[in-house]
Length: 482
Ligand code: ADP
Ligand code: ASP
Ligand code: MG
Image (cartoon, rainbow, N blue to C red):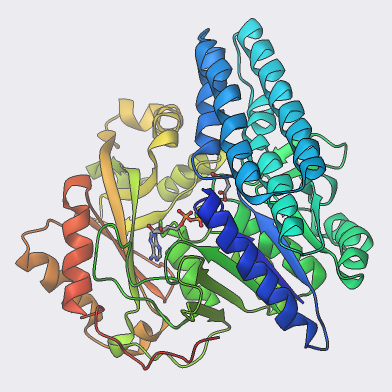
């Protein structure tokens, strides 16, 4: 039994959806030959749809009702065009058309009330942004039926139970597993392919939530773990996890194999190919993940498993970068004499629930530097100024400030720990390109060396390190096709 998750571009057009239907149909047959057959499909919204929904809701809150009115018609057409081309049965097409129309009316009603209130709450945003999957999943289920696959649409709001942290909810695995076992397993065992909405869930009380942007990968892993499947497949638009973002490094290559830890580091530090939390449910059940290309399905992609001997030259496997960060510094010559500054600094940051991506080693001992997302920097600065009001007044602490538009570049590979000289090679490569390293990480995972550069230097830094470790060259023979 496997879970197959299809991303936004994989369901982004008629041709792509037709391709997905072929891939699923083939997999269903292949699975039928195994002793634990079954396929569960998880889908994203069609590409661009989540953004359209969010922008329309935000515009409505700001009093502009044009975007949602326009989006309603546009989204109906976008989905109906696919249905018109891939579903011949008129009855099936009409039923789907009604469902799409109902959903989009609901969208319009929601946006109208957002406009009346002049306010968009996180809870309201979750209802709107999750609608894209509630359009694409019934469409894909109908296309699969038209292709001869017994498929049935399932709304994850009925099965993925989460906490109430809107915009980034966490699953409650106990009740989720119960519901998946009760509702999904019997479907699969009777030969039906459930087509489940990614990205969305609901609280125990039934209030819709989302798992955060890009969260359909996480949905697939949650459902896969709840079913204890044999493999979780993430079907996307590249040949697996690459040595770097192909938009930055055009000659990046596909990595045949990575450990859970390595992929978690890559995803956390900005490699968009997987949602950062995807590995968590998989690791606990030791379920292998595989990242595959919908548009090149015979490519073996990347297999993600528990750690094994590193096979990368020098241990470096991939480079990633995460943008829109701020480097916050607390500095002052009097800091040394005042105990507990670090504890109070991070205590304040924690109270603001800001995510610290990196704590860096500064050249002087009289400062503390750390990196937070730009979106939480202002709150953190204010909290620190309040916390250290007295020290600032007495000039024990001279300044608390942030540097904006910085990027964390992370060099990832679990084999790095046993290999001397990696950091030196990284810094040499950057030095040769005249790239100024603002800070380096302290105490990051052993699978990761991270450093801070300006936004303007980030792409060159990634390319320089990629070149220095010659990651574009194949490091091990390609695996046989699936
Ligand atoms: P999906 O819609 O299938 O979830 P995403 O757009 O979320 O796809 O993620 C896939 C994209 O991630 C790729 O098209 C690629 O541009 C980008 N990407 C960034 N870093 C990497 C990387 N290291 N390996 C593969 N893809 C990456
Ligand atoms: N549709 C959602 C998003 O765009 C979730 C996903 O694609 O994974 O963020
Ligand atoms: Mg994605």
